[in-house]
Length: 272
Ligand SMILES: Nc1ncnc2c1ncn2[C@@H]1O[C@H](COP(=O)(O)OP(=O)(O)OP(=O)(O)O)[C@@H](O)[C@H]1O
Ligand SMILES: [Mg+2]
Image (cartoon, rainbow, N blue to C red; front, side):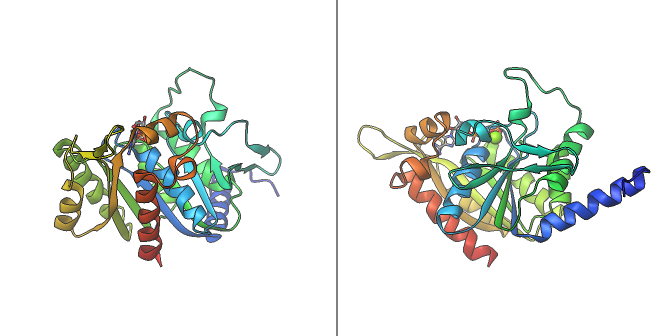
């Protein structure tokens, strides 16, 4: 029976979200206080690492106005939709289930949406996307503490938040805020990843402390949250992101590839 009044529609949407979430064992949000620290790189590579460790995994690109997941995964085409049933089937790339706003956006045009509209896009993803049964669903969030972050954290009911930081003090400062935000949102488990932790020299393979390292681990210890691991800065990883072939698939034996595999193992231990 179609819903006519807004209350019925809202109740139906809540019910659909509940039904979808029931089928997903572990829900994780990846966020940071600061932009450009590597959230999408972490979300994509962690999702593939979990998949490689035999977990059915989905990735929700919750960055509505700057969705980068399709670029970094090489995802093309459109998700299938059924307007009558109001359902969206996630796209699949190398075994990973993915949903992103990117295919719906005109190329090179900005999406100028205010917060409520961005939030309603997230809510619609959560109510309409048919993930089916998953072991892990990761959400890649935009930087900061805006509407999408709040909506995703409230409606997706994640059991875990992963906060990504780089080693510099400016990023660590924002990371502390992000950890406190996860606490305020009552997310039970919080883990920190230090990305761009040392630069792997492409000539000699040695590490250079470009942005420093160790600050993320120290900060996690001080704040009483888990430290999941460090990921070095590596040219191959940036190339892999630009070419849509994540490093954990294109070169799992690289320093970053191994780091992500270790972090995925830590995540599995932490949630189980
Ligand atoms: N460990 C790394 N080694 C090399 N390059 C990296 C690494 N992590 C991220 N990058 C590169 O840094 C850039 C920014 O990374 P990314 O887009 O993942 O950050 P973000 O936090 O998601 O950014 P935004 O806040 O805009 O969403 C990308 O070009 C990415 O390839
Ligand atoms: Mg991003």
